[in-house]
Amino acid sequence: MTPDGIYYTGFADEAAKGIDGQIAATTALGWSNIEARAIDGVNLTDISDLQFDLVAQKLSDAGVTVNCFGSAISNWAKDVLDPADTSFEETDRAITRMQTLGAKLIRIMSYKVYEDREPGDQDKAARFETLRRIVDRFLDAGLQPVHENCMNFGGMGWEYTQELLDNVPGLKLVYDTGNPVFLADRAQPRPYPRQNPWEFYSHVRDHIAYIHIKDCVYRSDDDVTYTFPGEGDADVKRILADLLGRGYQGGISIEPHMAVVFHDAAQSSDEQVRFNNYVEYGRRLESLVASL
Image 1: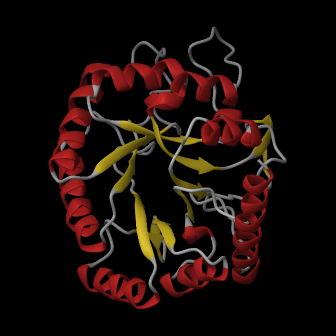
Image 2: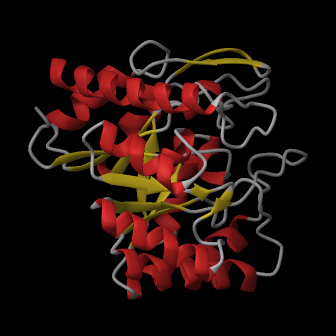
């Protein structure tokens, strides 16, 4: 039984490249939501108008809702010192498409980390100013941007996420359970240790509006093994128990990374393997939540 006020969703592009397969995996789980990211390898914000209209029609016909846009806005591949107009144009396209689909949440980030600079030298003023303008655009449209603790400024440690929140009014968080396992804690002295998922969560939990479930074991930067939820080092069960115990209501989104790692083109797998893994992951998550 799903707890009151909770719904399940996920990055269905990890189940299938095309929208038909993504819908099929969602309905196989008995779910009615997708966190839409890529369609045939292209972000939903960037596919053509013709393809978007086709995707929207197929979702409507299947009774499946896009609860969140997994956008690439200000993500780990983008430089805050590049012209900001590109980010604003991407934001405006996303707003139009979110309104068409009825989506209310959008995942954004806080631009790439400058690896050749110290953590305190990351052009913070430029980040905060650009993100304030992006966030205001979404809020003015009645939409909620949520920042993910990924390979970006806010993902350098919980202190950086808190600094981001202090400087970007209206921004909320999507907490990814797995990312701290393999990300460096840049609030600590070199050589940076890995982050502690529970510590990160416990400092930012009051700002969480949405959660991504990912789990993994870190051995080295070249050796990260993704696992089913609760089987890795991400404190998934402890975090979910605390979150639900505190009255959380909203989406729980799966990002398995087991059969395919979205941002690693070297990783690929058979379509049926991807599909089956996604469905199995979702079922295991439901069982874990039920056990709480």
